[in-house]
Length: 288
Figure (cartoon, helix red, strand yellow):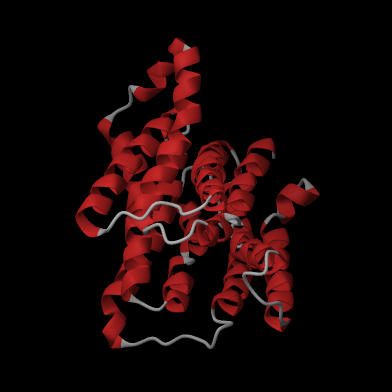
């Protein structure tokens, strides 16, 4: 249960992603990713520098590095590409298939069993997410956005795949995430140089948002998620991940970046209810 709760703190931190991103001004996405992941790697580098014995965690087989870097960088590359080539509402809804894919895909993992309440909880969470991301007027699915839709689907499969594969690397120390973040920062910088024009934060507030992004949603969150999916209940984490868009919407409303409405209330019931349903065994302390 402890590992599952630690993993869920990542979901809470990810709920601040939209706020920090919105508050960071006009910094291009790949530049923002490069800065944020560079900041995210600093705590890990400090720990490895202070405790040399833990550096052994970086000596991993190539498959671990491919999975880790592919998950972190691949997800963000595909997500940004999807947003550039499809309406944000459509891309966001499609990309947020990843919690559902984690819950369903977990049935393929050794020692795991997929039960009706896991699926029901994930589907309820997805329905709540759909209400949130379509609140601006619904989907606008069009053939003109095919590239964006494909990238959004690949985005969902990339993160769910990374999370499920991480489970199979349960013996790999979470310290390795430091290397994943550093490599993602470098690759993001390359994409920024090739695809974007540099725009620096224009105020102290924007710099604070960028630093907050690197410390939490793009920093500690990945360490917590890695620990959670390796040692906790991955089905519960998958379903509970739908709390991120709900919490994100509430936070945006509180900071006046959004407006409240009936969709938020209904989404709250669906997402919270779905997470509780998926976690019923952990809550009740028994198998079913």
